[in-house]
Image 1 (cartoon, rainbow, N blue to C red):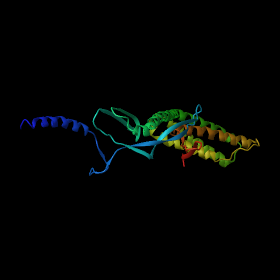
Image 2 (cartoon, rainbow, N blue to C red):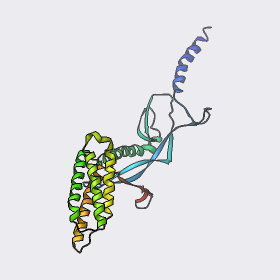
Image 3 (cartoon, rainbow, N blue to C red):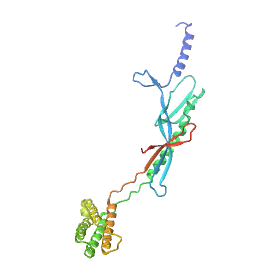
Image 4 (spheres, one colour):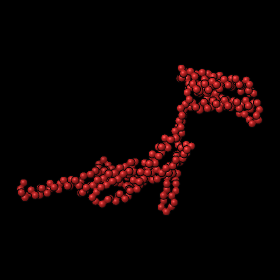
Length: 281
């Protein structure tokens, strides 16, 4: 290499790193052939009013504002690099921007203005999501089922009461027969339930209690006349109610589900804010 070419070679060596630095970055494409470039989609959000009817005595209704991603409102972010220094941070959650930061030696891109509101919107969505989780956590009323032994003792007591009272009641023979049959079935159920060695049969005996509750519930109801027959029929209804309480206590506990309603907050220009119900339909 001649001395005349050396200055030019040194200049080229300096320019090359600068050019490579200016081209650094990441490109995004929509196809496998890498021919159609695109950007990072950032979606806007629509505000909704969420109403949860919890059924709790202290606070039966919870309401909150949530923000749901709106696919019709989308812009695209495309990282650019060039000469100078720049630091860019962009965080998304569910397609919505949660944080955005940029340090650059040039002016701030116009994209910052168009998406500035999304940061506040997403912050509100995170808070209301936590509130909704708190509502769900606070409405569980599941209770432990009573021990089989306790149920058996109560069933046995009802059976003895029926047996001791049936012949004294002013009822027709068919009704007395139904009562005596129920007393025998309930006595057997009580014996099984109070025996821990017969635990595998306990569920079957719960079904027996329910069946006898239903059978006695089909007997005539008392009237307001206050006759001896009405007194007898009221006694039957008392047994039905007691058996019903035991049936309810032995059934699998169900956790109540909140009743949710969702309303879109409509904000049309020049019109007052209104609500449009979207759930349930």
